[in-house]
Picture 1 (cartoon, rainbow, N blue to C red):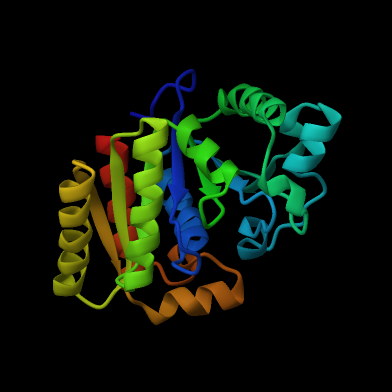
Picture 2: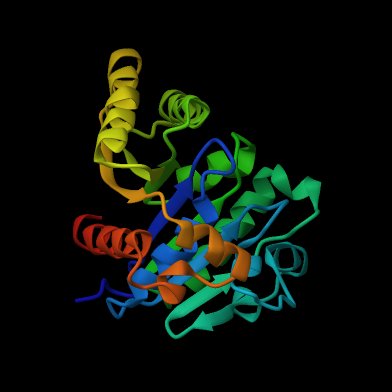
Length: 252
């Protein structure tokens, strides 16, 4: 049974480091959730370099910036990319949107709450880094999903963001998804490494939701601007994302 529309589950997908496949994961994960008959809203939270619309070949007429400036009904900016899947596009090439002021944050929170009542899940795809909008979205959401790869710089940046969110913003639970892993051994090693560090220095336990294997189908789908879960539904990555969606649907 899908969650009540009156209490949508809000998930913030974030990474710290760019280039780890966060937006690709968000889009494919959202589509996988709709397969459970859930209505899903994806908010492109990259306020300066939005690209969810690019991965889905969407024509954007209105975005988050327009809504914030005009005060219009945020539903006017929604694009239904698939049955049960709506996108609220972010702004692109607008550096001042990266650091939202308190009034803008309050207004954005009101818009999100207003429009999200029509959905079962709200998934926010944040920018990379530790900018103010990234921190705010993580505080606003009910749950977070950290995307990281086996790359040591990915783990370092993810740790830095986790430290900041736990120390300064009171967030105590962090959910991990490993992306582009070459095998079970590499995935387990990556998870164990960052878990040891966060347990030792932050006294935090990280929750590993699952891993997505390295798959050529992912890169090809990005180039073709088609979600890999649709273009190659039998691929290893597509199967892993469907499993993750089922797990999140049950656990979160």
